[in-house]
Length: 322
Image (cartoon, rainbow, N blue to C red; front, side, top):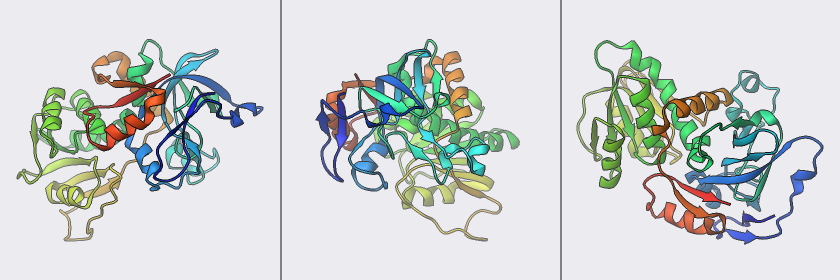
């Protein structure tokens, strides 16, 4: 089959026309014909050697495709061991012995993908497989992060306030979800004027650059995760507020009694559960506005997609099509 392969850290992606379908001969599992695969910043982290991914590997974890019996489906890419506490509670994405399609095993930059169990495939119904592909990671990750904050937003008195740091692909999803799932006043911080304009178009009440002064926020969601953005979050969270760090930039902040506002809480949020993927797809069916326009490129142009993503030339998401 045709696949786009990363052969070594820091190398350009290579199109292979006869890539071996090694996993497809297994007794168990499912095969889907890939229709589309979103391009995610996590793919760039693999290229840069920041994830412990085996090489060579076929990247791609935002996958939609066709299953012989189920029809159009979207892939739930984190696969747990099935035995640990996290798995039995449904949180396979944080299983210590799990794997992920496109990050730890071959993924969707290919014509076909092997999936270990049918339950990792969710029916798409009438959703367009191309525009729905980014829901598998970008949408699901933002959805879980927002859900962590919704209870805090609803528990306060008066108008709740939420700060979204970073208005890229995930931040854009988060703005839409916050407007649909809460009555909170949404402020967005991003250094790029174009992304601030996009944030306003998605429903943000305020969109400003870094360094602006703010009243404290009940919830802060950081989609960057650098030292500076986490410090911004810590400086702007309210007493009893919640900071949720999603971004993978590797930042940290000092934490301790007196170092942060009294009884503020700090947490990370990772991907989403299989059950949350169903909830997200149901939301997309009811509110198709969350399916933002995507930029498409053919599968063989995956390297171009990576270069454009690195250059910051993508206001939303890029999707590779087969």
